[in-house]
Amino acid sequence: MASNRKRRRLMGEINVVPYIDVMLVLLVIFMITAPMLSQGVKVDLPQADSQPIPQDDSEPLVVTVDAAGDYYLSLGEDPKAPLGADALLEQLGGVLSRREGMPVYVKGDRHVAYGKVVELMALIQGAGVPSVGLMTETPEETDGR
View 1 (cartoon, one colour):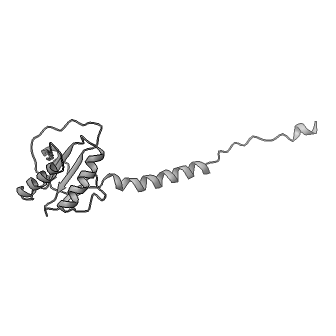
View 2 (cartoon, helix red, strand yellow):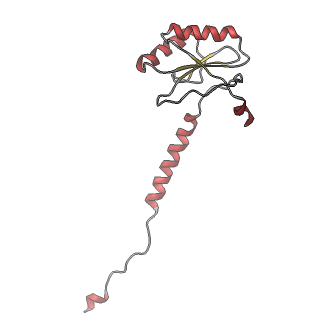
């Protein structure tokens, strides 16, 4: 009967240390990946009343020309590094060889010379892209700035 008196009491606490460890790991992962999601080059797009392009599952390839006339590739090695014409063709060919049929869009700053945008489109078509889309900014998008 003495053994009945030494019953173990149930523990009414939850050990939260493993949950805190998981939460901190997730926090670090989000802190590292969040800046990678919003990479891009700041350009001032021309405004136009246009219909949005229907979205498909594949991420489009965006080639940007800024006001200074520098080229940038959204899916290249470093999206924020300006590229020369030869480097752009090389990286563009590499991306398109891996993912054929990928949509390609030109994002040109409104202050860049028209000739620079035409040169960029000629470079893209020289890399084997049959059609190139132009990106614009609708007036509704600028109201929120």
